[in-house]
Length: 228
Image 1 (spheres, helix red, strand yellow):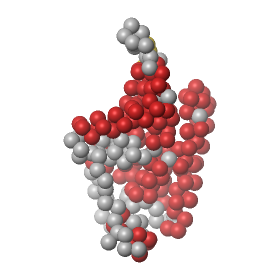
Image 2 (cartoon, one colour; image 1 turned 60 degrees about the horizontal axis):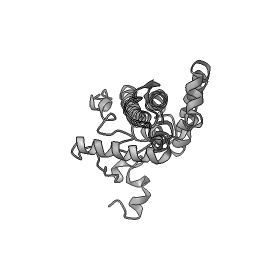
Image 3 (tube, one colour; image 1 turned 90 degrees about the vertical axis):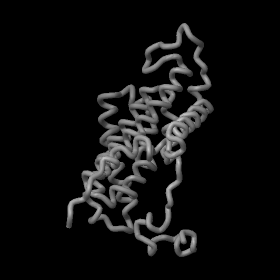
Image 4 (tube, one colour; image 1 turned 60 degrees about the vertical axis):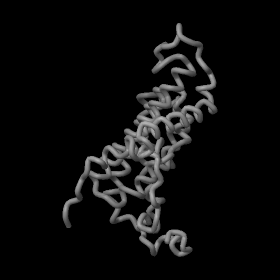
């Protein structure tokens, strides 16, 4: 069996072209919930990156051992193990960030970005490629949260990473640290990405039978004629 060809795009795709938050529109719940402050956004992004890289590596190593019929539960158990390790470390060494992220740190277990990469990439590729994919997707997630957190904190609190910036410029607009402001900023950032990439980043992929883990035989949509 030949060695798997590793491409630089495996690392860079997740940053802009396939950014999980701004292009694939995944992980919107933690994105909107924790980005009231830039530090929370970065903390959540790095936490998810750690779990994403570690789970991708382990799932890639075990892809030929895990039975196909129970692969999703197995993936969740692996991801949950790394989330538990991460939570314990953060509670011990970063208690303030741990408290700020709260329940959303535990919900990394069911984060569709991590589970999606396990199913679509790590279960089909080698260890190095899966690690690079995890790093790229994690960096893209962290970058999106940093951008949103920075905008919302500057406009909504007048600070950035706790540093006062707008004291003599304008009064903080509190709606930006509330839910409506989160949706507004999210839409604006997606629109900006669409404008800067001239619409090339925001596009739907073809999820036909070739994307099914089990091929046409495992595709319920194919049986109904939906993917033909």
